Amino acid sequence: MTPAVKILTPKYDIADRAQAAGGVTRIDWADNEMPVLAKIRERFERERPLDGIRVGACLHVTTETANLMRTLIAGGAEVALCASNPLSTRDDVAAALVDRYDCGVFAIHGEDTDTYYRHIDAVCDIRPHVTMDDGADVISTLHSRRREQIPEIIGGTEETTTGVVRLKALERQGKLEYPIIAVNEAMTKHLFDNRYGTGQSTMDGIIRATNILIAGRTVAVIGYGWCGKGVAMRASGLGAHVIVCEVNPLRALEAVMDGFEVLTGVQAAARANVMISVTGNRDAVAGEMFDVMQDGVILCNAGHFDVEINKDDLSAITAEREEVRPLVERHRTNDGRRIHLLADGRLVNLSAAEGHPAAVMDMSFANQALAAEHLVKHGAGLDNRVYVVPEEIDAQIAALKLESLRVNIDTLTDVQRKYLDTWEQGT
Image (cartoon, rainbow, N blue to C red):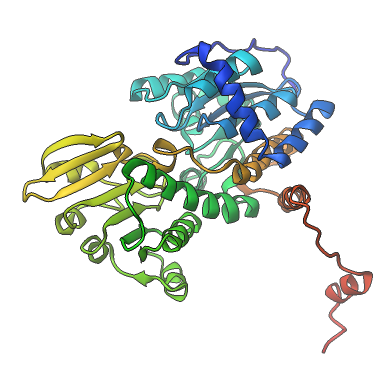
């Protein structure tokens, strides 16, 4: 689909355009760790598969995201970007995207809720043909307050578990109005980004915010999906005793088999020095859990929205509070205990650190770029459903990543292929 009328590059709302030079330097540094996306960008520059397409994106405004935006623009797209989390925005990166890369950006670090939603509306104002979400806020806006734009949309992509959950709920209700590719479900996304990226960056955020020693502590990881597995693995590697909390019996059993202690949330809260929510759901830390927590416990969220830790429940038992370090708020409870909340319950890995390393985001954002290309080519033939990333795209990204690492693998012989394609040959 190519629109008949081109809409001019949107205006911007950022903190300080003068920070652009520093942003360019950091974007280039990340680009060195993103060879797969660089190869896709080179092809996009030649082939221009997104010519005439407007892309509206709500993602973390980081150096890695900047390289995705560069790739979409290289492919011919007109792009507007807003932040999916106010505390993850890097103002110098936003400035560089506006000043050097002709990208519309609506994001300011620490913006309030009203500004956040005003920026989402600004992205929708470009009347996108393709949406890119990290939490489904753009698609939710289009499905609620801006439904008149839906006929113009080819399809969208979703980056996170939380967003995929929301969109599958929309699909089950028969209310999903355009096709979505769940980038989060790509093997080259959740096996690496979710596990290795979240694991490393979460522990990085906790250490930067608190400067505590992890070794010898008891760390409770709430949720044992791919992100939770990564956090548990990294905490254990740093010398912590790890407790896992789960509601899914298969994942709980897997955690046991992986060598972790599995307890209920209340049991874990009574023993943990650090509690990390990684569920993608609300109220993972709530109610009675606060009543039994140890003095000095550290709470943080590495799932998605700031509803994973029930801050109302925490406030209800708080006698006084103070910021004792940047992004560390101490709640003194009515019975004298100290509970430390990191980054106001927002994503600790992006609020207190720099998010996932570029090397894993390379694969995630390669999925985003190729999914956008796939939607432009094939979106008209897709139903209004949530789709996984096509296997050929997943395989292509894995092959490009291996190539960049100078890793060679074997290929099947003709005899082996024939064996796999027949039932006559047995033992």
